[in-house]
Length: 114
Length: 114
Image (cartoon, rainbow over all chains, first blue to last red; front, side):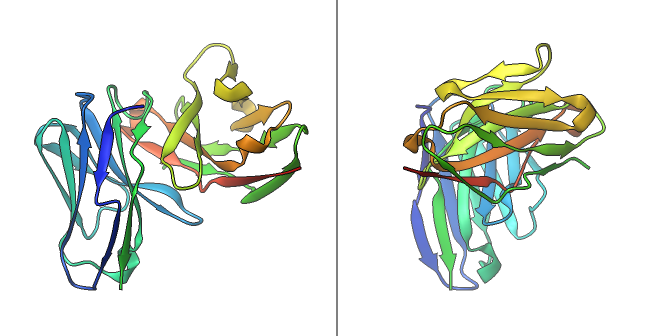
């Protein structure tokens, strides 16, 4: 199994509070992604990174920011959580561009915003 | 913009029966096509992928998929389903022209009855 660790795995928070989810990899892969999974929508890309300090937006990036200061860590921040951000968040990594290479997924972080 | 349609939200098959999960994509370029599987509470795992060449691709766990350009389809098949195949299946599409992104379908939940 790919070495991907997401933390926390479960979190309950209140509307308006900041939340940071962490993805840590031990594979030294260049590309890292954050997806959210919601019933009926599959997985939707939030943000991705193609190197240290290099990030770009996905299709559902509003309300989210990311940072990647080290190859192994990719952080997803909700500056002010809203109930619509209740979801399961998955981190994925790849050693090639995500549209051509296999993505390896973490086990997910379930976030509930009350 | 690229899109992926999985017409069946749920499918139930008997153990030992054959399976076909449908995937249609909308794309203006040559697509890269993937099928992923997600067991409950887990991340996604790649079953198979198509980039070019033979339009019938073999994957893990006895799955195969056929790329049909004329129908914009990439259907997943298995000749004999096992109870352990119960999971959610996602079709995904990427292309160089659309950057470093995969677009996922909404998923098909497979139930296997004994």
